[in-house]
Each structure stands twice: as C-alpha cells, then as structure tokens.
Length: 186
Image (cartoon, rainbow, N blue to C red; front, side, top):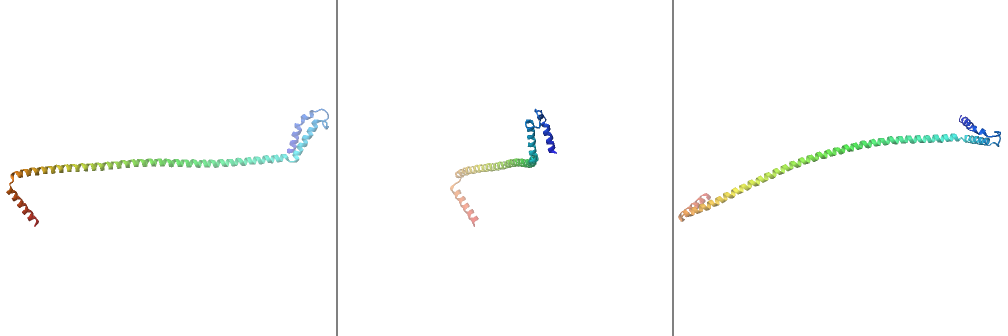
C-alpha cells in the first residue's frame, strides 16, 4: 500500500516535467531522464527496504524517548517522594528545635527561680548571722559595763572599807574567812 501511494505521489509531483518539448519517451528529453532516474532511485529505496528501516529507526527512537519519559517520570516521582520525606524531616527537626528552645526557657526560668530562692536563703542566713553578732556585741557591751561597774564598785567599796576599817577588824574578818573555808573543806 505504501509503495502504490509513493508511486502515485511521485507521478503527481512530476507532472510539471511533462512541459518539456519533444517526444516525452525519448532519451533526449531531460524531463524523461530525470523522471526515470527518480523512479529508479525510489525503486532502489523500496527494494532496499529503506522506508521500513527508517520507520524502524523512528519507532526505536520513539520507544527510546518513551522509555526516557517514563524514567524521567519515575525519577520525578522519586524526587517528589524524597522532597516530601525531607520536608517531613525538616518539620520534625523544627518541632524538635522548638521543643528544645521551650525546654531551655523553662530550665532558665527554673534556674532563675532557684537562684532567687538561694539568694533569699543566703540573705536570711546573713541577716541571722548579723543579728547574732549584734546580740553578741550587745551582750559583750553589757558584760563590759557590768564588769566596769563591779570594778568601780569594788574600788569604791575598798576605799570606803579602808577608811572605816581598822587593823583589828581586818584580822577578825580574815580569821572568820579562814574558819569558813576550813568548815566547807572538811
């Protein structure tokens, strides 16, 4: 069918060749020679099955292109799958980073609260220690004042007693003190 169609198209395309002068079927007519050469060329192409070879090559090329397109489609789908996987992983990493930041903020807030509590405890200890030092200083000052008062009172009593006491009364007091000590020891 192809051969008949090719011949019909060939003769239809060569119709302007009949415009040459002289008898058409003579070898001196260039139009006839060109037509004959063309038909011979087309016959050789058909005998060598060139249209089938060209069709086979075109079919093979079309099949190769189809395979390439299918492979490209498969690669595209794989790339989309990988992209979706990476997007999920990126979202998971982002969520994990958000959780880490939130946890760090909570830890920082807890550390700040603990530091405040520790500072309050430290201040309370220092206040207690300062109050104890103040109390000790007051007690020491009161003791010093009492000791000073006792020293002054003893000095005053000594001065008064030494003015009023005679030697015989002093000897009596010494003997009484010795007897008192002797009675307490035995």
